[in-house]
Amino acid sequence: MIIDVNAFIGHYPFRKLAARNAEQMIELMDASGIDRAVVSSLHSVFYRDAHRGNEELMEQIQPHGSRFIPVATVNPKYADWRHDLEECVTRWKMKAVTLVPEHHGYSLTDDDGKAALNQIAEYGLPVVLTQRFEDRRQRHHWDVANDLDVATLTTVAEQHPRLKFLLSNWTGLSGTRLAAAGLKGRCLIDFARSHVVLFKSIPRLIETLGVESIAFGSHMPFDYVGPSLVKLANLESLPQADYEKIAWRNAAAFLNVDV
Amino acid sequence: MKPNRREILKSIGGVIGASGLTFSSPTLVGDDKLPREAPSSSGTVGLPKNWRSMRKIDVHAHVWQSLHLPDADWSGAEDLVEAAETLGIEKLCCSRPITGGVMADTEKVRDANDSVLAAMKRYPDRIAGFCFVQPGNGPAALAEIDRCVDAGMIGVKLYNQFKYSDPILFPIAERCIAHRIPIIGHSGHVTDAKTKASQPNISDSLDFCMLSERYPELLLIMAHVNGGGDWEWAIKALRACPNVYLDTSGSVLESDTIGMCVQELGHKRILFGTDSTMEGGVGKILSADLTPTQRGDIFWRNLQQILDRRSA
Image 1 (cartoon, one colour):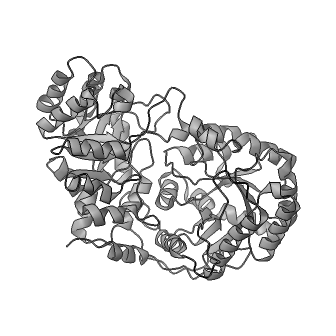
Image 2 (spheres, chains in turn brown, orange):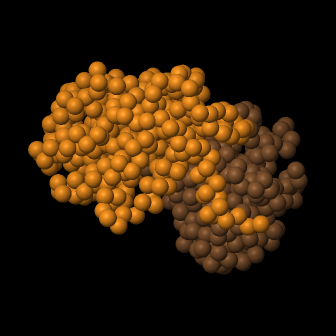
């Protein structure tokens, strides 16, 4: 079984994606051997009212049973966002909450960011932080969002010691630095931009943070799934239990998902 | 039991053994119908079962340490070779360009190429060399090409010191034509201000096209379609330049890149490369919607045909 913790549904304004709705994502998942995908709405990143994207997401995935694990997107600068978050958590049973401060115009360390992170921690849910959607070298001139940085991440981790973090599409993570910020045991890192061979960033993260900290992620539909499948294949020499943790068990446990 | 990194690395290094095929310039690999030892292959869902044993030549690889010095640190090269073995990459075409906006003198250029030559000597079956030169060094650059080719290198690597449309490159192109060797050139159509400022002379597709139009017989490879900014722009701008090849390397793994390359340029112009993004480089070729013949052409056959021209 494979659970992909780094996936999205929707259109992206600056590039045509290979899969843009739930049906196309199911086709992509089936072709790639992905059983379940943790998805948030790309539309929520760009709509003024992010919650409209959450509504669309739930409509999209409803016919597909358990194939999708939905993640809420919240904009703490928008009117009555707490009510919207409540709907995502209590009515729709969303398993995590994503924040996109660079796109929604705030910082994780300002009052808006702190309020959102505190509220997410109150629900006991993980926050999902995607370092970037696209490489900055190819960005559309309207896309001015900076990549999230490790310094902010570790600061936020120290400010919110009860909060769990799903780190999506990150590179440049130091396990030592994350552990020093208290993230060992409360973060899950998708390996879409990490490596088993050559730079060996995945083995290093396992060494410092434990195998429970790593999960399969592909960044689909932005990226090809093949690179992550190759990484997973290169981890087949791990003990079977550890391999399964990376393939799906860590994701299921971290997000409290029944499988 | 907690996994140990040393154990993990040891185990992944042993997934696939060296192919045993001999590298004898200019041919990088033998006929694909030759019987080969079948390495163990992953049965991971979503990948072809034989993906590791598919023949592959990486046209874009690097060594970075000063491997020719007595106390050289070989760890990076060892990790590179280990990664290639794991992924079933038979040959790595390595260079060591001078980066960081440096206009390197001849001595530094020779030093960089000596490092590649040392890697070729230590791994003759795995590493082939591309000779880095700086066109601004004039006749010394041409002499360096001759020296490297005499020592067994199979191509020339250019970086971003000068645009490829600059006439200063013309003697380099003419020397490569004379040797019947390819040029692989750093490229990018970058859209962010920071990268633009740091690489003011980076060449994009149009620069490659201008050089190719002047020298249609030149074997010109535009490097890392996924490592130089707007890849859709780069591919579209290459449509009109039938003599420019393109390598697939780079850290960007965006879906449809390979499909668009094939659709717009034809698969015979596409060469597999990693530029150190090893699993990503292999994985995107495996994910792309290709026929087995197209995949084989991209993975190794197209490059082999370029190199075969040396003996034509």
